[in-house]
Length: 355
Ligand SMILES: N[C@@H](CCC(=O)N[C@@H](CS)C(=O)NCC(=O)O)C(=O)O
Image (tube, rainbow, N blue to C red; front, side):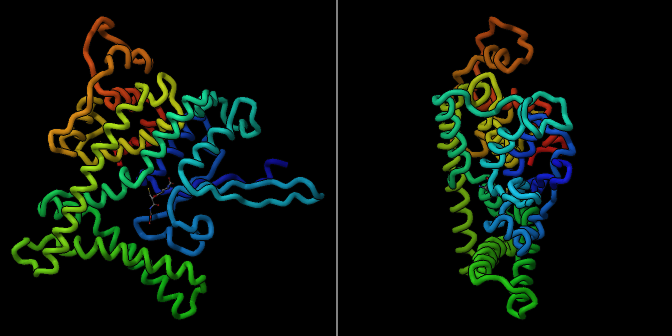
């Protein structure tokens, strides 16, 4: 009977930061390639605002995991769906849904290690880390859209981000027009949601559109817009210092909960990969190099405390230790990076580079 049941589907966009935790979880948990359908939602074109997607996730965010539910009480099997609408709940679900004994252990013989914290104390550390990574002060998407300190930076930023914002504005304008002309029918709540998203998109475009204009040629309003944008961007990046300090303090090391990978590591890997890429780090860099680039990028002489033994970190991560007697110290985030980037899951999800 279970063959008749439709598969679960992960709606995702490959370079979205919060799609990485579920993609990492699929690898870490040993799901077979055919156990779940991957469905691309091109958020760079605003496909996430389509009414069909909003029915799955009214916040219009990726990832969403749609899971078939089976009711076997009556003579007919009734199939319904449940949509899990955020990365935290999705990785928890993926973790619980595959164990060596589970029914989904069908197409893959890979081990299915538990990623959930094993004790109440670990659970508290895990929740604290995940909540911090998903807090507004740490928002990796806002940091991406505001990754500029100067007018020069802004020119480069607009060149890469503007096309996406233009496409989103066009998608939203089209949906609003179709609704106005009764070509589609949506609730007032959805219409208002599209309006809010359009205004937010236009706010970025107002600044990106003028990015090529030298400061002295901007009119007073445009100059003020740019000043406010650069000030907000500087503030957003300044807040990251506190987030990094807190993370570096709360990690047990090298992984969030010590020597075993767990749910919090999937979120941390995704978040750190984004921040490292925004700071000019690459896959080829080691932990100390990427964290050095990140420290320099957040600026103001910011550094993280180096209180973790490099030899101990490598031993706990199962990596080769060249000099067990070495007193060399690194920060915990650097040790995390060195450990996580060697994992097959990370190598697969970031095979085309950090994002
Ligand atoms: N809390 C959500 C956040 C998801 C999220 O912000 N997704 C971004 C991509 S990483 C998105 O879909 N943005 C599209 C939009 O907001 O229009 C989660 O963890 O899944």
